[in-house]
Amino acid sequence: MAKILLAEDDLLVAEAIVDALCSENHTVEAVVSGEEAADRLKLYDYDLVVLDWGLPGQTGIQVLRNYRSRGGHLPVLMLTGKNQEESRVEGLDSGADDYLCKPFSLRELSARVRSLLRRPEKIVSGDLRVGPLSIYPGKLKVLRDGEEIALLAKEMAVLEFLARHRGQAYTVDDLLNKVWHSESDSTEDAVRQCIARLRKKIDKGPDSIIKTMRNAGYMVE
Image (cartoon, rainbow, N blue to C red; front, side, top):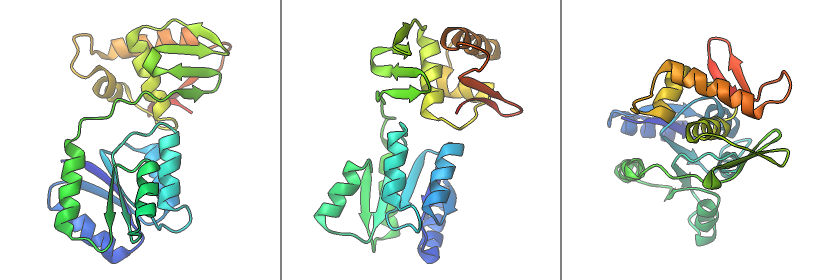
């Protein structure tokens, strides 16, 4: 079962898609505008995004480009009435993992969703900037104002995870599931100690790059 974000402003189409995906035991959250989709992607975790190109306000293609530019790496299925090759290429180049032209059958939609969910999670190596920090995951290197900071592997993994999900708070349990998985040192104390070490290494002054959000967890803004 997957948690899926659907952004589609045609309510009849959206209802049909929700019914089809829920029948396969997925959980679907549906929104009707680009702004809502962008906000949800900043605030919540999903396994896959189904995104209509022609959303009102911020278009689907704009949402996708902004999401990828922030390091977002969820699989995205783009829906559109644009069937020209140029439009398909633009969608894929903007970061869509698959492309489905309207009208489409719900069976094909479901099959494409299953295919995307079967793909192994992408190894994302794009560089990140967080305030004074430059993070280079592919090189396992972090700079603050041009000066390299020595991080342990788990510290790097936590910092990269929070940086890739800026604006979203994660509890200790969330970080255990997302970063530690089933490793032998996966305890709540291990998470808190890792955050404490990170703060000592990356912070200068009283303001911490990794914020503690009351009753919500840790977050990079």
